[in-house]
Length: 609
Image (cartoon, helix red, strand yellow):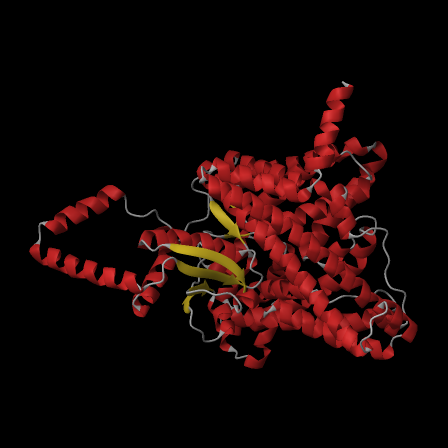
């Protein structure tokens, strides 16, 4: 038995505890199960592994910038900076190394529930939030139960996160159908879901306005505010301004200590720290984007094979095309409210808040879109206000709750992180005196509630599916039908002549087209909707017979990325401005036929098809 334990310990300590290697293994297995070529399997596993390493580097840079920011601002406000006994880096190297196991196990639980219960008809596909929500659950369980066995943590965490991925698209489905007007073809998979519900039903209850009469899209916002859409730019700008002002009023000794012997002037150092802070987040997101590029297609491929007929639940930007003005209204309101609360918290001596620009943008955008769908621009402003308040008070409360694991989760959080984390921590803390095994009681209770909800929903008639959406996502015409059409055309001289001319023109166009065509899918953070759009575009280009290499990225990185074609939401393409690349606006990220039609029209206009 001792030899067996030694072998298990050796494997655990040197392999399963290494997050980068485990993520690479998951990607490798997922791609292999889809029978991808060996070179794609190996390359995908390595890219996923490297992505996690980059993520950890970004976390280290972000944590360092966060410490400096809080120390300087605290000194300027006459406060003590918030302290913690651990950091996100420490947690990821310790108990947090179990997160990949939670993701893998949770996805199995999720797919099993979707397979068994008709009501669970959405497959959760927002990969970066699969990762972060798993970190939140792992940290919450460790805070409640202490240093628990990693396999118990992985098992309980898998059940909890799997149930969350099943329920979250369902509780937002009624509002999502109102926003998307697609009969439920696309679900929401984003950790701003509690904000969306609070905004939608809150605006309705308060009777803030009429969605038609007060539609936000009838408003025109100044174009000069558009740079805030780039979260890297807005983070550097706002953090930089706050740092420069804080340095003026901070104690000189504190500033000198944080500068750690730097020879530049304090204001130059402060500006560099703001840029470093933003760069840390950008590196973190790049790392997440890199490993998700391999993990999510693997997960989605498995779900498509095992669960035909289900619908995808996607990232929040899929809603942004419906009301781009509402997105900016919600975001700007969130920023203003958060900055006001930052001053209020400092004046009250409560806590040093850190503006989470990514969460202010995506959460504010979510509040804006869902508020506008119910009450017009007034609802959009209401949603942004709610997001600012939730993020401020949530950051204050959660920093203390996660001080022994990963307090930075409070700074990076979306509303669902707070809601799920606090509920789970409350239930777990009550049972913790019974021992670590009682964590299974929490998991069992959550699973029982999930099953009960699915059974009750399964007894209701399914909501109607919009016929246009159903047609748009239909399968391509069978090969046999295509062959019959070709045979018929060959017996018609006129058709034969037309086809011959068409083939000649297509050949000339193909000769002028870059081969392979470099295609770049773009979204706000480069992790959710652009990843889904990349896969959709791959299928569309295959149907067009165009050889292409596809990548996905955020709107900021897209400016420095060479591409022949850039696809994305119109609002992000506008940010890129005029360039040599062919811009193709796409509204529906999962509609292969719409994407194919838009790509065909653009390529034909350029003379590439």
